[in-house]
Image (cartoon, rainbow over all chains, first blue to last red; front, side):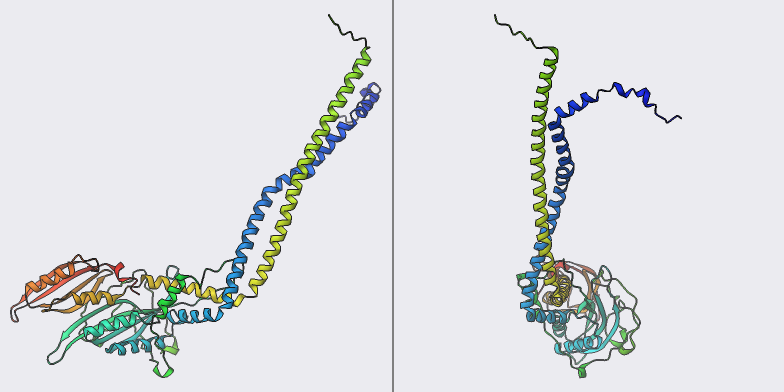
Amino acid sequence: MNSNINFKSLNLKNIDFKGIKNFLLNFLVPVISLLATLVMWLLVLKPSYKDLPNLKSDLTVKQNLAQQLDEKVNDLKLLVDYKQVLSEKSLLVNEALISQPEIPELLAQIDKMVKESGMTISQLNYSNIEEALEEIEYSSVGIALGVKGSSAQLLSFLKIVENASRLVLIKDFHYSISKQEGSSEESVASFELFAPYLFVTSEAVTDESIDIDISSSEFQKFVDTLKSLKHYSISPTNLVVPEVSESSPLESPAPTEVPGIPSVEPVSLEPEIEELEAPPVEPALE
Amino acid sequence: MRYDINLLTKEEKVEQIQEKAVKVSSVLAVILLLVVGGFSAKYYLAASDLKKLILSEDQKIIASRSEISSMKSTEVLARNLSKKQEVLGEILDNRPYYSELLSQFYERIPSGVGVRSFSFTDKASITLSGTASNYLLVSDFLKNLNDSEDENIFRSATLNSVKLNSGSSTVDYSLIVNFDMEKLKNEL
């Protein structure tokens, strides 16, 4: 391909340069104006117009975040002012839902509750620890309990358990009443209990608001509920060395230890709590 | 009649037209320049104002974040409390109060009826057995459990078996009682 241009063939002499020059001189103002308009359009108007929606949404996001953080600062300032109260409420909550299993203390507390109801213990052992699963937000300690006493004492025991500050929930129970010659009516009951516990490790997340409002009526009601529960304080001398049951948490306690308990297969009353295999027992508990 | 006679030469006419074109195009170009300039200034200033506002919000955010960081320990305490409150609330709301069940159950046992055993067959039903002095008392017991009072937590009671003890002339019975688990919740 021949890339050489034959300038002669273009016949440049015939182009009216003077005419072009005159035209440009005549239209100098419109040409400069149009060029300036184009430059302004490309360098100022178009980018500014294009940025506006992004800037607006950016501003909205930042304003919301600033407001959220401002509210959080105010909330935190209030909490700092009432830090003493916050610590007290935390203690109250930690009494109900403790952070560690504390099995000896739990057994001692149950022992106290049984004694307070006037019943006698025929069996008290710790069966297992159910670790927190995704659908269950807390872990729990399983307890098998066998007790003897009257019907009224049994009712009293249930009320005591329900009003104890450390949460002890009844998973299953059955009882039988026997009347022996020369003695009063006696209830023999076996319980499968579980005590929830939850270890919480929160982190300070700067941009997230705090959900708790200690001045709300809802929180006050919650605290009042916890305050109405009775705390069973345990000194080290009261501690009960836990007996570790070989049975699974859903098996009833050994019938030989609780005479008179009907041999009805207990059924879990809390199906949402999944069965777990008993974890290896820590040596300290044995 | 009036006639306009243009006596200008052809070159002069072209020049006239050219002058007109220059004038019109100049005016139009300047107007366009002014309009575009106006809009450019408007949008540039608006964007500039927004940028200033964003900068000021950024400064507020930085200040708030630094203030929040200084109260970190309180935040952790509050978050722990919040999490436990949530879980505890859920437990307390869904906890069945069996004392209420037993209490209502005792109230409905007629005199002359004894309960030998009581156990749960599933989440919301109980199997119980016992002895009564006669069939009528068993019937009374069933009626008491089946009454339609609002406070009654027992939904239904059905007789599973009944048999006469010829030696003691008493009646052995077995019942299945269904109860409303929801009514056992939120007692506190």
